[in-house]
Length: 74
Image (cartoon, rainbow, N blue to C red; front, side, top):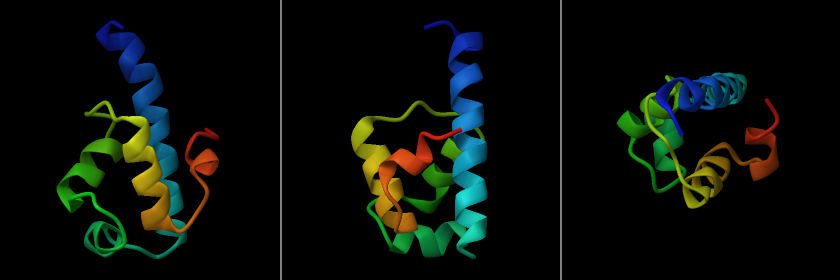
């Protein structure tokens, strides 16, 4: 994929991730304690700076205590 196409998917995903995290009242560090993802990486995902794998999506969902499909509903 090209950079602009990557950004058109990654940024909305990140915005949704941030919305869900804040709705749960979680800081980056608290969410990171709930899953196997470093708090700095969570921030990068929210900013749409880093592409992520399916396994990462599953870990993020675990950290938020939600189903993975909620992360993809943006």
